Length: 308
Image 1: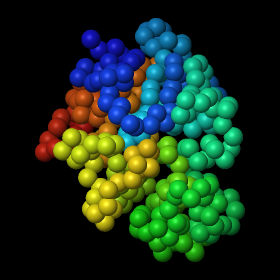
Image 2: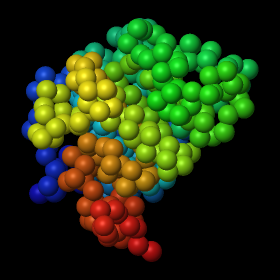
Image 3: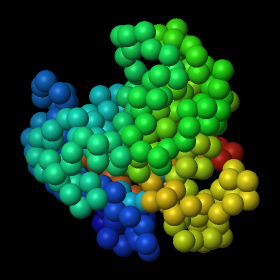
Image 4: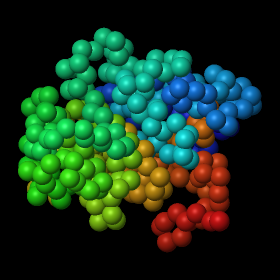
């Protein structure tokens, strides 16, 4: 039976039963409730609070684990709590209830350098207040030897020509790709990306998807036939490293078809405390999309189309 506030979506597999293999547990949320910063959650109801736990919360009673090799999409309507949840997972916003744990350690047990080596945060829109070149921005993003070089990161994102540019002179799409390049340079294991393709044209959306699949390949120790990603072509015929399989990405997005092409799992927020979580194929269904977005959907030619 489906439970509106937990990982029991019809057809989805509970987290405890998902294959674990040798993958690393990178983050875990236990009974987390999230409120909108500075106020109550708009549209929260007593019924939603009863189903989900904490009254007035955008998200309530969230039990969620993130393991190496997983690419989680967080979906929901505007103001459903996607960005606030990502900030909470990044340690930048305190949960209203519950706890956030990285790799088995509470957030207050991490010093700044270790935290930077573990998780990378990409905001929805970077705010550049000082005159810094892209090269300098990327230099400041490095915290270990695990990341790419600045030029490598930019080249992967069709941004190699931006290296000497003033970050303040970039278009929205260019600056967003530079922000993702900062994540590649940082070399962290847990990537938290707030709408990473919001300002991208279709070609660059596809490029960002390729970067995510390349650097966070799904299926540690599994063959492509068993459900893992085939990244051999992207890596010049080399096998994906164990370090790649120990990475995970969590990103918010509004484009359901882009999510279907990139995500391995989906966390759907209903905005009234309730949530659903599970593998992407079990989550992207007509009833679920209707519940999340408040409109009807139909599949057509391998794509999802919203209906007025």
